[in-house]
Amino acid sequence: MSTGTLLAACRLHALLPTTDATGVTAIDKRAVEGPVQVHALGLTADLQADRKHHGGESKALYAYSQEDAAYWEAELGEAVPPGRFGENLRIAGLDASRAVVGERWQIGAGVVLEVTCPRTPCRNFAQYMNQPRWVARFAAAGRLGTYLRVIKRGTIQAGDTINVIHRPEHGVTVADVFTGPTPRQRELLQEAGAAGAYLSPEIRKVLARKPAVPAAG
Image (tube, rainbow, N blue to C red):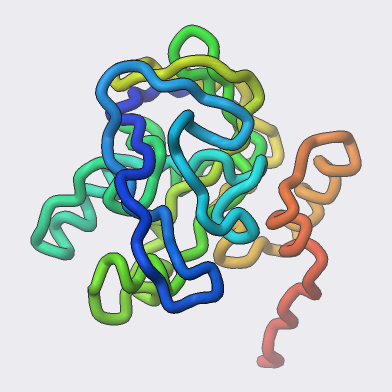
């Protein structure tokens, strides 16, 4: 199985005002020095201001790959330090944007996380980044990162090894879910769910939608 490295664990730096119904966003994350506890809803002392869209057990943590951050540094002409995209985990060596749904990561000695669903860029993210057409650009690049749920709690810190300890055979990635799974990918996810695999509410919502019908040629 694949291995990677935790470059930084990030949590709330400051709440920022928004124009949506919540009124605030917790997107401003910064790297933590030293160990930090992982619990069912994320990192100790972190906050999810809008758990309906950006939190809860199926979205307890958000991971983003350094390789994708490097792409955006070149595109934007500015640094993208850990936490800049609101992520809790900045990782290297693993492609968070193409992690398989249900894949499990062990970080350090004991924390186990499970890949659940892709990040969907929103207007608060766009406001925070202050970049033209940010939502469309971020989505089109396909470098979305992934949300994770906590299977086993514990302590993590920068420098910890990330081991992929389980990868489902269906092979459907969070990127596939974001762009719209093919009919076969939908079947594979449905079969996995029927067999007892955890499917997040977000994945179930995608599967509940009628698949797009190809235009007649």
